[in-house]
Image 1 (cartoon, rainbow, N blue to C red):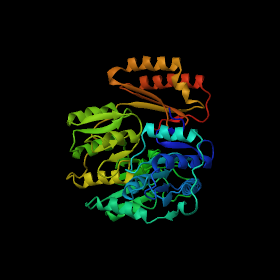
Image 2 (cartoon, rainbow, N blue to C red):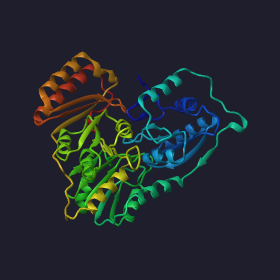
Image 3 (cartoon, one colour):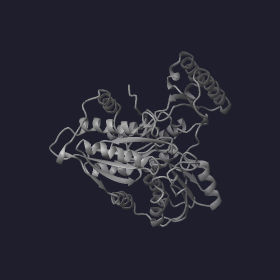
Image 4 (spheres, rainbow, N blue to C red):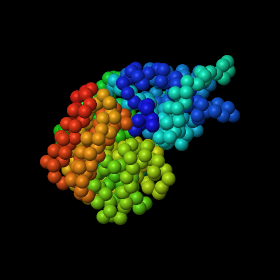
Length: 448
């Protein structure tokens, strides 16, 4: 069982346990012992960050810790998460690290790890790192000429941008609203989209360290919808703070989440399957079946999708929340690349108003319940009630109750054909959780 690592790395409130400077030191030592044991070459670790306030602190703490272990460090500065994945592989680094809490607000931060192939670590690899950290091994110390060096490589971002630009040859037309969530894509995505010929209305593109994801971006799509309608745009694109998620809105302001984007990508699918998670809507699976494409479901987390794709012929994978993985580009979600892939599809479609919605999602009701102790999910009463409702929903519905891997939250998702029934189910489950565990923060509508 992992204690520090969740669905997407280690995440928490910056400068509070476990996300402290002490953790950076222990993690660097554990990574050195597991991934940099051989001394035939000088190992290198790549570190990127999003623009949140605590990014500098963790970036420099990790760099210092690795240097003290004799590992060279390349600092990328503010970059989107997919850039770290791609550049780690390109530079033949031993490890890539992204300092980011993704879609969370500025007071949180996190550490995402990528192996030498640019893939996120597997559960057992994370568990082994935790085990090494818990052993309190002797300090991993380099001396004299063995000390690591730090190299600032902001030009590495140009490598990522060039890779994105060179992957597409279409010329775009029309007006696009781009919501960068005051995050990593703020000074990148609008310019690249302009280069492709689009008129770009750029919003939430002025990061100041504390406004990342605040009432904007992929987790607040109503803002995007309103902007599209106000500016009479042809499409809206919203990223999250570190750029590995994207949500779209059509000219009518109607959302396209990860399920709908996956359906668009499936139109050009050359393999017989695409990949999503247990959270994807049953209507997506029904639609894909109608075009002879099989939907494979994994656990929640884009790394599980990526891991399956790495060992299969699947070219596209997506989470409902907007992580879109395109195998030919990168083994992790890239919001900008996915958006350009959809725009490429539109440029190749002769219709004046091409089809973007290929299915209507079954009704869903979701809720996030903040708790002090996520083990409440294992209480007998809650589990028996879940089984009762699963049986009630039958084959035409779905119920997912899970502990978040990135926050102190229990997430509930009910899907079916009767909206009122779903609301009653979610309300009853919520009451059980509230009565069983004290609340630590405001309960919010569900965000996968």
